[in-house]
Image 1 (cartoon, rainbow, N blue to C red):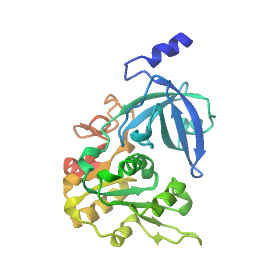
Image 2: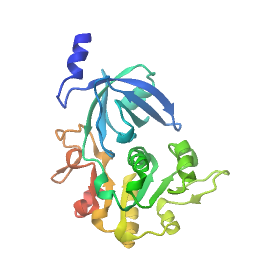
Image 3: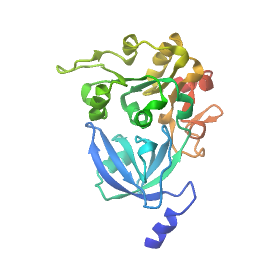
Length: 284
């Protein structure tokens, strides 16, 4: 068995999972947990913000999961925010630190950080969309001097559904970050905006020609957020969206992620609006 693990660790095959250890598990909400994953000591993930990995449990299967941690903080360790929604993710939540899982990747095209440098950056997350967007936010903040204004708009259904609440407090306390929050259904303690995420646009002043916008969230959110961004108007090539929800095999073999002629797992999951403007299927 030890010899097999060594062979897997050093395999270059995109189909062969690497055995990785769960270093820690931290509940974020009732349904989401943050997993810290540790690769073998001689390996590094070398991912970019917006990429994803395939997580496998032997005897159950595998699933694509976006990477939540920043490349600037990766040294053989990375983080995955996992929602408990299916067979694999339910089984994953039953594991303990020290257990071994399989990792393939990273896969896909992440967000073009080099395109954002020198610009104001508008980061928009809905619900679980904060999980992949956190990777980009953390990298931007780690290299804060490379960007102009950093504006974060984040919405969820309920206050208790907000992810990374400790980090939200930290971001709100920074003088160089503009954080705006909203929920659909507030509780008695909620002191921020109430309503869908587009209500937050009235709270910020945006210089359109010098702004790059990144949007990650549920499909229903995209059309309405895009309408706001185009009305500002932010150039279509400066609006980036993630279609990570379409992932399956991760390597362009199953066709599950296909948008007409485009394999999202290979050409994406991040796209500029200029690239997918005519693919209405992408926004449905």
